[in-house]
Image 1: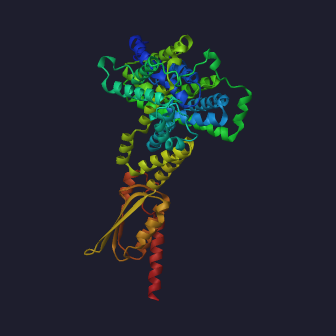
Image 2 (image 1 turned 60 degrees about the horizontal axis):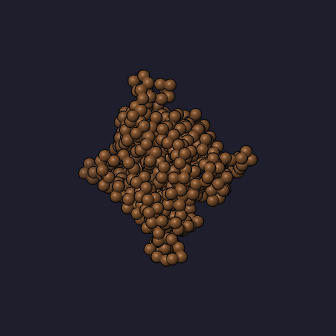
Image 3 (image 1 turned 60 degrees about the vertical axis):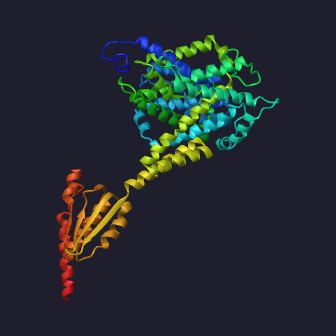
Amino acid sequence: MKHYFPDLFPDGRLQLSLGRDLVASVVVFMVALPLCIGIAMASGVPPALGLFTGIIGGLVVGTIAGSPLQVSGPAAGLAVLVADFVGQYGLAMLGVAVFAAGALQAVAGGLKLGRWFRATSPAVIQGMLAGIGILIFAGQFHVMVDDVPRKSGLDNLLSIPTSIVKGISITETDSHHLAAAIGVVTLLSLLGWNAFKPKVLKAVPGALIAVVVATVAAAAFSLDGIAYVSVPASMASALNVPTLESFALLGDATFLTEVFAIAIIASAETLLCAAAADQMHTGPRTRYDQELLAQGLGNMACGALGALPMTGVIVRTSANVDAGAKTRVSAIAHGGLLLLLVAALPFVLELIPKAGLAAILVYTGYRLVNPKAALRLWRFSRGEFVVATITVVFIVVDNLLAGVLVGLALSAFRLLVRFSRLDVDTTTDVASGRVDVRLTGAATFVSLPHLAEALEAVDPAAEVHIHLVDLSYIDHACLELLSTWEAQREALGGQMVIEWDELHAMYHNPMIFKAPDEAARARARTSRETMAGAGGH
């Protein structure tokens, strides 16, 4: 027990901070409630399926998580992928895909592959989040005025002006302007609360305040013409349990591609969130393999109910830490509160206008785009910024999976180019007849033609010094070239110095980084004698 739950045994004895954890659980519950429903809407599934995922994220994953203060639930980062999946395969197949993705995560956790999911380029992650943010912003903007989202992300983005016109046009035949008013009120409430909330109420999330304001405003003005959250008479009837026959689709290669996409993106988002959570507190560090296993088991449970896939979610996690949580009890209790709401008070959800939830998701989408992070990336590396931008473009124009794959491919290509780059700087001192050749970067077979060309351009009569101390790497092909070139120069009576000893000192590997052996020098002497003999004839 102490090994698996170090947060409960900080000094070897069981310690529970029930007071702080229960207060934190209420805060997380208030943050999770509107997001569970809103993300379900953005995913094109009934709200109950988002709530089921939130419940499992608390009660199941919270109990066995490797990151004790991380809170799991439906994530905006998967909403676009799920919406595309449901549109292609139907809601009935969602459970199969989520269950299979969870199984992949559980196996990866069991094989201790959790840490490797962190090895993802920050530019790709930033591009993925920004692309998802743009898609959520554009799609939910239409819902915010009770309009219908378009079939593609690009169409949603280009048709925003049309929805703006509908939202500001007052007519008696539709209620777009009324929904738009609720959306604007929701956004103003959210922004106003975040900017001016009293210190004594700082734990109360702006999203909850905004939903309450939207609900009260819609009820006060009797806005019956706008759309409200739809909840089934019995929450049990909302279960989307897959049939055994539906698992036969796992033999389809295209379907499996979707499953892998859900598993990989959910795992990467979860473990990056866990790494961020570790920076927020001083308690036990994340056990990445255990966290991945817990997420896998949680998603298998979600799949068995036909609910949304889950990830570790940074918004709920940061709220949990800020509210003073000390152990996993807060995450577990927030799942219990969601279960209590679903079981005892489902009718409350029907009072919430969809435009209000859509407005919160519009704000969430903007936050995911994160213009400040894009600016920091630009200042840090133009190349990384380009990778992120291209990732965003492919996500918006094509789909999420295509964008991520293109981003990963570009990052790998940049890495290959960067670690294969060799700079050869040649300076000549005319007075002394000395030539200094400085090699900087990675000397590999890829840069062999460039290195050979630079060496061949050196005056044969010059005294040459080859500086290798600034090399980050040198492979056997370039070592052989330098050795051969040195032997040939000596055979012609040239003067030269190569920093073999400095290179050996850097890498401490006499088997690889060493001067030419005696055999090479013997070959050089033979070559010199042969050339001298040929000159005598």
